[in-house]
Image (cartoon, rainbow, N blue to C red; front, side):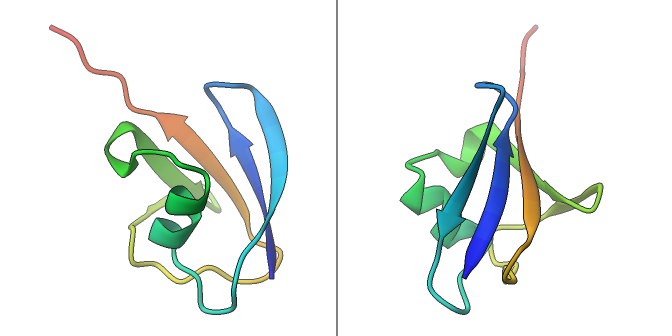
Length: 68
């Protein structure tokens, strides 16, 4: 299956091929992105690491910013 991912920090959109039944965690591992530094959004809602992805999903990876 293929999903489209917009990486906010890099301002780029990519298409990623994944195995059927892949999850958000699988996607982040493949992209070598630490799950603690991004929020994954689908249809304007944050989704969790164990959320299954579907063919042709469009996702956004938003950088988590912290400070004091």
